[in-house]
Length: 320
Image (cartoon, rainbow, N blue to C red; front, side, top):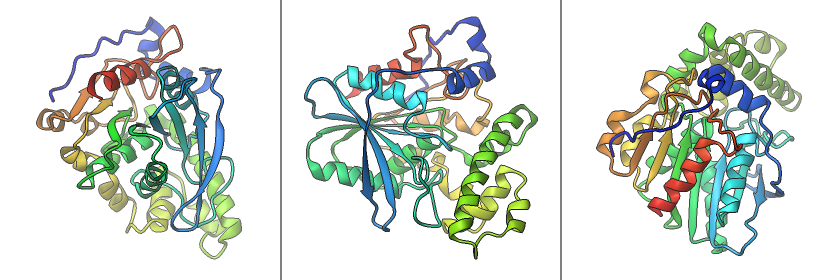
């Protein structure tokens, strides 16, 4: 489908991409979402924590929500999405990626932008229960890339999966890495690196033979982290190999269910390749919206129901 027009027009302050990004991450509060945690065992013996919230009415519809880098199921964008879908008669399950639920995972490997096997395991677990016949996938940032890659890298997906939404998604990882290393994003990059290194130090306690103090001192940038840990722990040659094989951009042409991508033009994390207009024009199932504003997962609205949340519900109602 061609690129669809956007009418998102936030208050003046929120037209600044950095302001909307930071406000939405640090200041937004979403109340009234009651989550119940469930732990499942993955095929490799590791565990994953799922946080469920439910519609007030019995329903056969479910939204699966995936967070971004170093996020979790309690982030405002996760809770906001669960809340708006719960109010529209969907149950919601927010996935905490490995090591993101408040407890480090069991294995040396963890999660990354292309690790679709854990999403696949969750979907198989849910589908086997036969409770839901309509499932929607929604991913943010890294979770958006996982969602799109999952949909495009396989010939078929379970028939219960009817649509998907990816928000602020770095579908070309190498380009986003370059953007994150620019001066404009120095505070974000430092924050990401801080949290990633803290988790790597926890890994060091359990796998001291694989991580030395000297190794940690050599990690100066996010790319250094991906060269040392993300790539090696997950079977890639190096960071560039990881970015190349894990980017969802190359898989968009294969997506066979209605899928909406919402990427703000002023998202400082995204390179030009992360606005896949040609791919959208060539795939009838792919809908691309490029609002002028919104920063990175910062689509503020005055009623605290964010623009991407209302657009997601609207998209599902029109295509499912």
